[in-house]
Amino acid sequence: MWNKLFKFGETPPIRLITVLFYTGWIPIAYKAVLFGEEIYRTNTYMATVKEGYFYTAKAVNDLPKGFVYGVVAFAVAVVIWKIFCEILLIVLRFFESSK
Image (cartoon, rainbow, N blue to C red; front, side):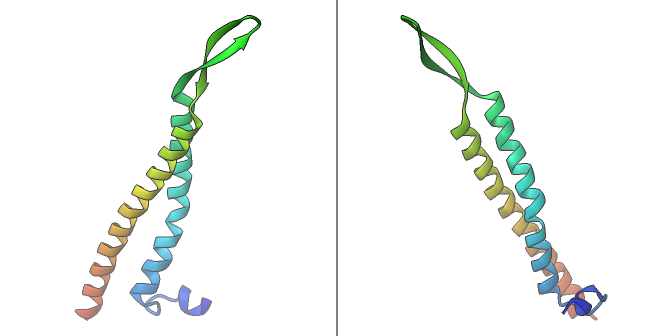
């Protein structure tokens, strides 16, 4: 199988695009994590904290918001990546059928 994968002209377009699609998840996941982390670091909310006899407000980073935004960013990017791969597959099949 590995010999067939690394030879040009031997791999069918569907397998090539499938490998490309799942390999593309790695940078998408990395960028989604960075996006979620950025949202986590820049968005805060005020939490009430008791200090001695007094209650005071303290700015706290918003972890749930960062997590949700990261997951949503990952899902949206995967859908866009899937559309791109489908278009690429259509183009490859067109050129393969016109030989």
